Amino acid sequence: MNFADSEILISILKDNGYTSIDDYRNADLILVNTCSIREHAEQRVFNRLNEFISLKKRNPFLKIGIVGCMAERLKEQLLNKVDLVVGPDAYRSLPRLLQEGRGIDTVLSETETYDDIIPVRTDTNGITAFISIMRGCQNYCAYCVVPYTRGRERSRSADTIVGEARTLFEQGYREITLLGQNVNSYHYGSVGFPALMEQVASINSLLRVRFATSHPKDISDELLHVMARYDNICKSIHLPVQHGSNEILKKMNRRYTREWYLDRIAAIKNILPSCTVSTDIIAGFCGETEEDHLQTLSLMREVGYSAAFMFKYSERPDTFAAKHYADDIPEEVKLRRLNEIIALQQELSLASNEREIGLVQEVLVEGTSHRNPEQSYGRTSQNKVVVFDNLPAGSYANIKIIRCTPVTLIG
Ligand code: 5AD
Ligand code: SF4
Image (cartoon, rainbow, N blue to C red; front, top):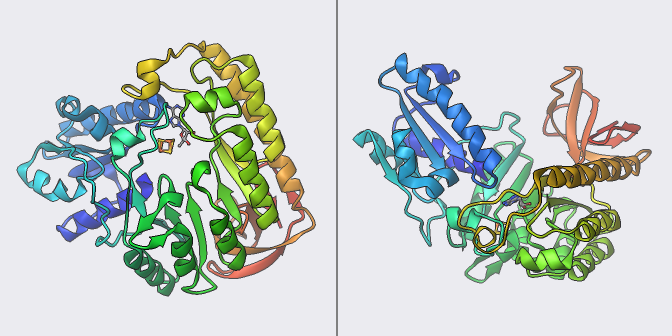
């Protein structure tokens, strides 16, 4: 999401006469687009910031800004470190604040979707791109800072989304990912997410469509049936479960049970037999017992995830969990549980990849391998990375899978 937001920021700045340069050490303006999701993410920004601030000794005209979620969360507190503080709904204020030389805008909006701004694409492959379709979140999972930093949920008009996708296709892009904190609650006028997917997938059968992220409570059979009807809608779903224990899911305010989640997985396997499922998992949430933790491990096995993003719980100030629950799992227990989750996922990822060996998969070629210029890489519909002998970027190829590692297929 931040990647897509940076492309909007660059667009706004370009329209106001700014240009980007390759070496930030020669810049007159450095903006840091930030994430508040875990303490570690914020710590990394603070570390990096010291380096940027030291450049002011060389260039007294240098302006430094913090934009995005940390700006929204920490507001004025950041002004003693940087010149500009701009929240995720206030990017349009940047040119004005830059003219004033210093300032802050962290007003959240109920309507801002930047839908008239054409992002300046910064991905280098020219084949895959993100399209932001909605902003904000109001699910209020107990651990999560996003509803506070990104504000109320709002959807962007279907026409501008389809228009942006069509333009990208005409420019040679072959895959788009529709982005939102919870794309399944997309709603603009009478268009819901399944209808939007259908409109985008109908642009051209050579344009692949992906989406992220889905909240399990909202993923409907209707969407799964749309996915089944279009070959160019990729058969991979990111469905963050967060935890395997009903006790913890309830405390997390996820609004589904383990059984309900497993029923959704059964629907995916039934309607989309070739579909892979990936997830997000949090280890060491408040009050998590050893029994709860084992429930996460057993759910992972039951689903057989193809991939996962796995985190230690990090308490975020002002969230429901920070206010009402004690962050009571000792650091070493959190770490041990996280490591058990990671080790299990390694095993599941490898098993998922091994199931591909011997199959011929349609791969969209994305570019030349970073490791070996004689090889190309691309992805299957199931979102697995494949490496194979050189082929032109943007083309589709049927690749036979011959070997694998836990993260890559070799074809
Ligand atoms: N601590 C750890 N992980 C978190 N996530 C969100 N908030 C926290 C937190 N406070 C994880 C969730 C979410 C992903 C984007 O980040 O798993 O799905
Ligand atoms: Fe955070 Fe939950 Fe919203 Fe995802 S759905 S952004 S975890 S509050």
